Length: 156
Image (cartoon, rainbow, N blue to C red):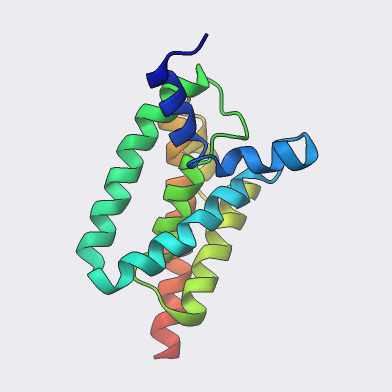
């Protein structure tokens, strides 16, 4: 039987349960990462009025908690239902962005994470363990933020 703290870690690792939705609907974890990344959208919109410093603090907090939760829940693997990494990566991808650049940042972060074809994303994943689980999504988020920031610069 899983301890209470183990259940809490799994719940957090699953993005407050969001990572379990595809498995409940279709019987497969496929697509769970996008569900987790979608959780970053209301988080970002809720924290935008509070400023970039608060958003960075939230990102750091989610990343630290993600390392703890994913490390305990994953046993060295990166199962699809663990989406706290996608939450952090997508949140980074839209950090301080608004309008179309926000959408561009989110999409590029997802594409970078899913395809692993953007520089350093696959290398970050290969770090293994909880660091690898979190790092590839954060690197993908950097790509999203870069693309969104360029779009924001060009559109304003």
